[in-house]
Amino acid sequence: MARTASSKATASVTKKPSTLKRATVKKAAVVKVPAKKAAAKKVAVKKAAPAKTAPIKTATKKAIAGKSAASASAAAKKSATVKAKANASAPRGKTQTAAPARALATRLDDALHQLRMSSSQAYRDGLARYAIPTERAFGVPMGSIQALAKRLGRDHELAAALWDSAWYEARLLASYVDDPAWVTPAQMDRWSRDFDNWAVCDTICFALFDRSPHAWRKIEQWAPRRDEYVRRAAFALLASKTVHDKQAADALFLHGLELIETHAEDDRNFVKKAVNWSLRSIGKRNAVLHAAAHETATRLAARKEPAPRWIGKDALRELNSASVLGRLAKKRAG
Image 1 (cartoon, one colour):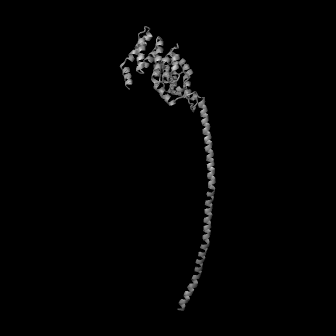
Image 2 (tube, one colour; image 1 turned 135 degrees about the vertical axis):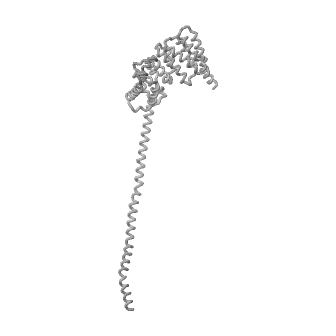
Image 3 (cartoon, helix red, strand yellow; image 1 turned 120 degrees about the vertical axis):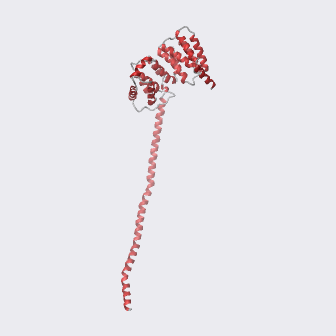
């Protein structure tokens, strides 16, 4: 019994150091907790610190953005002012367009190069059969010229340069790339004096000049001219107006019939053919003009001079044709 009690006492004495150790550890743990909280607080303070300065940075960014917006607005206003001044200096009814990126000489060289690449000797040789001079011709089909014009787009400067190059196909191309709104009476007179074949004359009148606001005045001015291709241009232009000027009053074409009758005695081949063309075209426009053109053609066919007689008889054949009469009947019914 005494032995048992003694061993218990020894055990209890032996356990005391460990108990003390555990107590010490617990105490140390209690001491460490505030240290962790302090560290956590420091981290929280560090994280919170930038948040205080964030509004300042945001405000700065907003200020910079505001200045950028103000600068952009000022630049836009300046650009609008420059455009307005440019448009103010342009002719009335026209808007100044942005200058092409490439220099005019480069655009001209490129256009002429593409014409050369589309040419063929066989086509060039065939032009002579249609009384078209070939000294300054590449030999390019009209379809290729029109396709090139679509790729180039409207370019008034390039059109003038193409015309001045004096190449046959370049002048045809000029009629498709020029802008009718920028064509002036002086340009029309200058180009008409350069006409040296019916193809250039007719293409310029049909594809460009007839869309110009000066066309009717030029018909009146050119009809009395003695130059063969200038007079032809007057009647080619009149014929073209019958097709493209849908809003023109009948009175304008009735006056055109007077010009036709006045100048029908010109027996030069390219003049009388243009006079005949314009007479037939006026007669196909509507029923009223058909009746007036028929009367004019009848009077011309009765003339003794060869030119007016041919003009009148040839016009009557088409004006009396079933196709023309049927088309006019459909117009009346519609």
